[in-house]
Image (tube, rainbow, N blue to C red; front, side, top):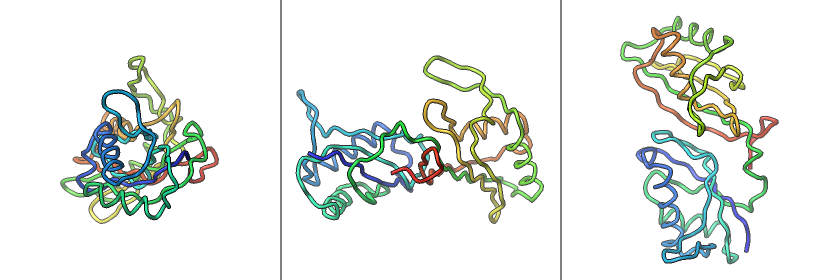
Length: 219
């Protein structure tokens, strides 16, 4: 048996598949693809899998990770090909390799947010966003398993930059993950609270990369 890590992406309509449904989809795909994997016990056995950093509903991503235990020696290229034939549109298996580092070593996540304004955005909006997002402190209510508390989210921003792209504004941000994580939606909530004139009419969220403590790609 080998502990394996699958890298996959979610795009298009698959962004609206919830985390739990994504897990069920991957488990069914493993079964349909004829992949030998460790299964749970009980009346309804299914492949035992774990997904690092569950993706919020509506987000797209190119760096999702699923851990599972492979019970045979099927080659990686064959496993990927079989999975992709069994997966629905928008979920694509990219690579598979033996699990190395522990998920607890993930330190930050790189996101790209696309801010859409019904009337477009000029350079003044970009400048004002950069000024606000680089300010300290930015205190806002954050939900946790223990309830709500005030958090200075500026301390959880590792890097951030806004720039104009056609009619939209892009926010490129590396945000803390782990015990003290920062959901990118809190950036928009902070903009709406403190600089409402800069609030976009619609936001697209995309996860680009998962990083370690040194800011390097986590694998």
